[in-house]
Length: 458
Image (cartoon, rainbow, N blue to C red; front, side):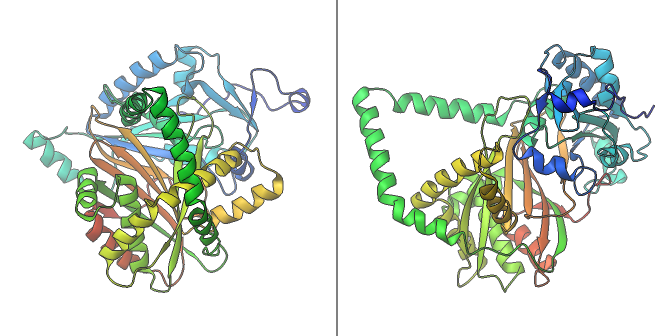
């Protein structure tokens, strides 16, 4: 049965306005940007995960995992929000599940109504709500699902599980790690594998006092040597696209193979998969808009990954120029810029500044300047590796952007096994060719399941 989320708190009182109770935290930093626009230009962000399993089986797995997660008093799923405060609910497991896990068996648009129902009052709401429904998407037709089931390659049913979450209280990484993981019997985190590999490498490097000292001295000397070039790169970021002017919205969904990006990296020496993907997007960007000679692009950097709440993602930025000939030269040229040692120093500076910006630690004037520069980026790549594998299988995943005004242009990239699920929410100039972008991006990256259909709940 479909039901609206229950409300467990009354409206804010005068006492609440005067004093923040110890168990309630104030929304600060980048979360305030979302909170100010809630119900007008901003709504719940959503992550819709389509699974190769019947709806009832998916719901049983989710209930079992949620019940286990709720045993922790500071589980992400316990987060509540009211006005500009959030806290962890002390409600029973049954009460939280009744408010947070909702079923829409007929696909009557419950996710959409919840997404647009927030911000219409000052009642308390769960920070994240999950809607479970049969799959109705654009990647698989009903006939395909039946055909796959007959051949034994998939279930005769598919389901979509959508987390609708308040971006002022929790960011996308925390949703993937602490909420989306509840959909699966097994889903080893890619981040944990990468972190263990990084820590092992760091331990090997730190063996021996002399070697450790020399490496530290060498790093300091290298940064000093690269500082002039890094300052030049920082200066080039000032030559950015203006966020003001005639723009239209462009949405595209695509799935890129991680193996394909590794192959491109090996053949064209474009570095890691993140820089290779960004280079592919840059190649399509320049092909789509012949008037653009330069693009300022950004990438998200995760910090404090273990916190169950908050927004802990800062940014690094680079200025890419249009090469003289060919999309392949764009690919290698962009990657060369992104991987340059002096760009690494610039990334360090920008990352530290934007980290303070995200946490709300900068003066108001500096914050406004960063807001303007942030909105004027040509595109921002939000790349979050989620799971090395999953059971049941994820065959599609769509991210729904919170703001109705798409500035800056953002590409959300979520990695599950070999698939990188990409959602482009861009505000583009009249000179931008949608067909040229789609054609070039698919050609360079080998993307599949490319379409321009927004999720129904958007």
